[in-house]
Image (cartoon, rainbow, N blue to C red):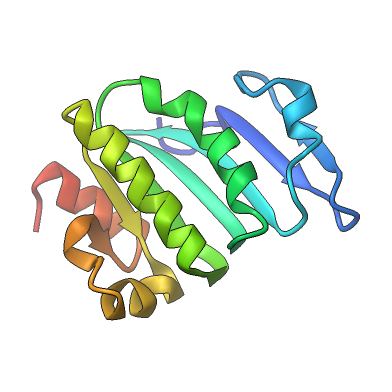
Length: 149
């Protein structure tokens, strides 16, 4: 549902401790306490896809927390979109984590879309753009997943 409340949320404070883990998160509270500083991951149901929004850095320091936050949502059905429009830094470890999510979904016959934002250039330069259903913004990637051009 458009505008629905987050299905789950983990936010890290400036001190690196988890501030909140809202209802529906399948990650145990102890894991939420390990969420590194610099990343926020939320999941929302949207028409046609589950959208996982990432804000902050997706890098060698935050990928373990990203994986813990995303894992519970990979068991569902239908396509998943990772919204990177609020990501400030995406390094090779973050790219590897996205490829891992894509491969896991592909094994289940599902697709992964990326709303790339400012990360579009690194995804293009590394040759990974055709690996995902990519667009620069969320609305465009959702349209691509629905087959609307």
